[in-house]
Length: 404
Image (cartoon, rainbow, N blue to C red; front, top):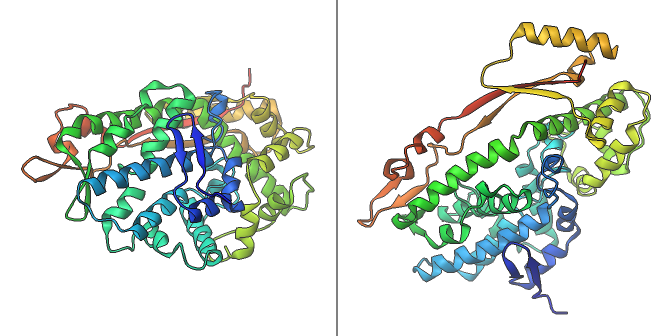
């Protein structure tokens, strides 16, 4: 069987699967599950084109990683064949631990285990199946490999993951501000003293990348309609879990039933949990929520209808904390109209805050000057906004059903 397949990607064109091992990993049911996990959760309720998947993103990352490896090798950086294959496997599997609708499960029914931790559990399980062939990839993914720059290609402020998702999410949402020049940035990559750096002539491309990231967060990832939909998804799953605990029967798949019945944390996330997690995807959640629209529990029914029929509540998003008197007034009106108990009110009135930090000074993007000196992008950029972009911007929100 020819395993050196070619995949046609709408952004990069033809992507070649570089080895038989990588083909076999892609063919594995754990990885195929990513075809059924949306890359951007419920953002399609705002941007109808945002229906792409984690599978597409992972394949795109392999393409960009191949380019990055070739660029570094051309510049004299020694990367062995084993390290090259390990880098490609690590970037391919970096998001394999994402649950249904990407982040919703992390805040509802598997709320003490991050997707990065679950990704590692999947990688370790696959390593057993593939007789230890993923060991080096796991070391690079964990950051325990002796060569630091290899890990930075997987996880840093200018990693392959971000270079793909910004470009891909921009493409599928139609938000042009996020369209970074990933090829130019990769061409400017180099390694100095085991650190991944950008050559001086790439400064403007880095500035555009940081600005694009900020704009994509406010316009897309933290868009207030998407924000309220994502929070409702979290709340509907919490409600389903609460009702299940009380013995209420819900129409759900076997995989979802498992997580509604059990409290999952790091200490009990064993192979059985992983197996059930691998069976859970967007389809389980959407099918369940569709059936819950007519459930006799008002809260579950209300939240489900709001998501499926896109009858989303009102949301206020502002720079200062929501006034307590305003919250009391909203609570009173919602209680009067919807006849729910005070203990059920938090399901209908959701509060929280969101943070947007385009650039983190603690793990800087280093620029290598022509004289060989390394500098943080902030200190060499003449972009007046760049230092400002490193300060976290916090906004507060409250969402509630329309009561008039």
